[in-house]
Length: 279
Image (tube, rainbow, N blue to C red; front, side, top):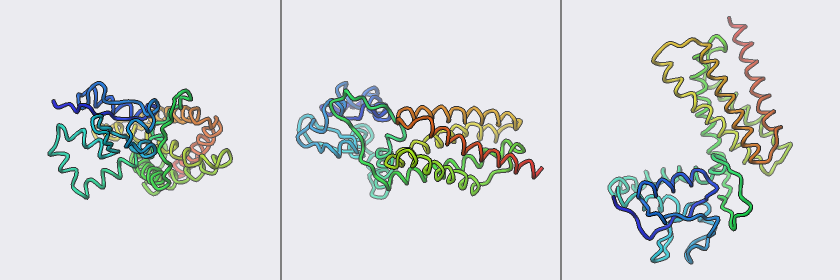
């Protein structure tokens, strides 16, 4: 195994995603034991050539011998190329590279709403990505579509408790949640509206992804509808817990969780009544 020596990743220690994959690089031997350092300790001045702001948006890889700095996708591909040169060459083709770079930026610019964490005020430096409205809306819309598709498929499993699902219906319901909660958070703070919506859609995305095992099992064996209803109740309960946990991190209070529950309760009531009428 080839280990990249004399190179250091400067990562955001407050980001669970950043902690996980930089630790993974060291544990798997891609980097040596000194191959990462916390941005919060060294700031954007770890190398004379380092761009303090860009290194918050895109993880920086510093060549400790020359001082050269690589950022974001370039830094990650440089590390991987030490062992997988042919694969990296294939991924470096213009169209493929552009697509991967967009995905990297989608995650990087939204990392604080994908995996929020309390900022430690004792840190010497803070590391927060620039707010990018385009990438935030892209993340919200992707989460909205994925959530709607998975919910549409899952609701078919517990008919007749609800009427059969459709993607268009779930798109309207999930879109309504975005609008409802945008109005609710605006009553509390307009400046943090997009931060809240990003976190809320992460909760929705997590919940919908938890439905995938049920969808797979439902294709293999027949399971009574009430079992799926119970499973869905457990998923929603976890989503409520996760929503409340995030509101605590964001210091937005219990009110946002209550409005989230209110909207979902109204929607479930309407769906239940509609199902009863169609019996």
